[in-house]
Image 1 (cartoon, rainbow, N blue to C red):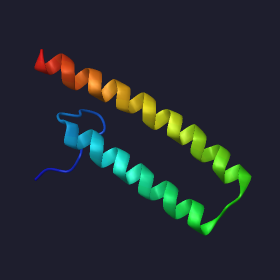
Image 2: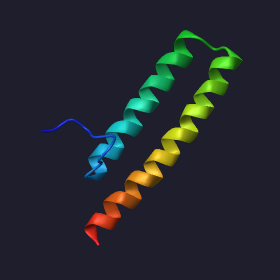
Image 3: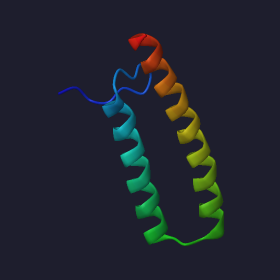
Image 4: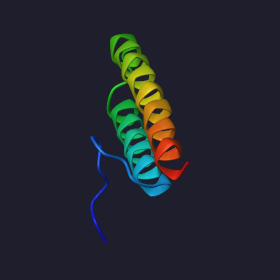
Length: 65
């Protein structure tokens, strides 16, 4: 089994691994600190993750078609 690739996602499993890692990171950070500044930073990171996910899905679909 290969590790997930951020630069060259090849399957849905790469995307799911990144999303699961982000959710776990966000959960752990919010458990340790509940600061509003930290929440704002996590929103910015969430936007980046959503944009990357969209790009990764489009890249995977373009290879399949």
